[in-house]
Amino acid sequence: MTKSIVLVTGGSRGIGAAASLCAAELGYGVVVNYVSNKAAADDIVSQIINTGGEAIAVQGDVQFEADVLKIYAACDEFGTLVGLVNNAGVVDRPQRVDEMSVERLTRMYAINVIGAFVCVREAVKRMSTRHGGRGGAIVNIGSAASKLGAPGQYVDYAASKGAIDTMTFGLSLEVAGEGIRVNAVRPGIIDTDIHASGGLPDRVAQLEGKLPMKRAGTADEVAKAIKWLLSDDASYTTGAILDVSGGRAILP
Image 1 (cartoon, rainbow, N blue to C red):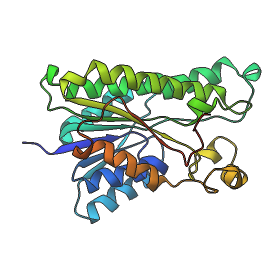
Image 2 (spheres, rainbow, N blue to C red):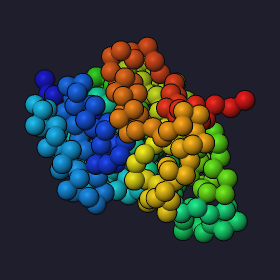
Image 3 (cartoon, rainbow, N blue to C red):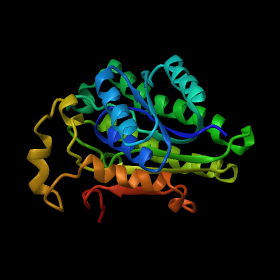
Image 4 (cartoon, rainbow, N blue to C red):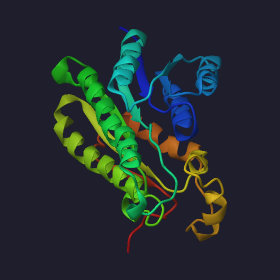
């Protein structure tokens, strides 16, 4: 029997990197997907291998279907897919909706929504018992922004993560009888470089004092929730969304 593997999209940095390490701790071979930073992906692979695990780095941009198919072809050569951490995503610079261009919106949804859908499509083809698979777990990475709306910053990003919430619910029911569990983790303010990529490098420092727990979360704290949802300990959990937001996304 080939080894069981987990694919982590956007697995070379931040939450994705921490999730890759956690998947390896569960004993899975890990496919660390990256877009451009090969050195960062190779570093995560080396960390896994140095602790006795197995991992490979695979380049690919999920906004392009051909790249997703290339990533999954590498998975097929590496082992039997039993898990997907659907993590790849982008934010953009703060902007009101009445200032947003079609180019910005097209990029946002190509990566955060369409790319996420194509990734789960290919995962289901491999994991579903309907297709001869062994079952498995999909963990989608959403955002507390889907509940908060992100007004004046990136309503488009928040809406894209709202789509991930809905996809999680619907897909979980669609494949519940086919051996696949589908859940999501919804992080809040997490201290990673995604804020800098969205033009707000000081966002964590600016918001920490306003957060219920008076601090940002860490990538490791989010990854531990992902690890549980991937594991057999979550064997009766599907269609769930776990907020890892330090209380920030709790509505009245």
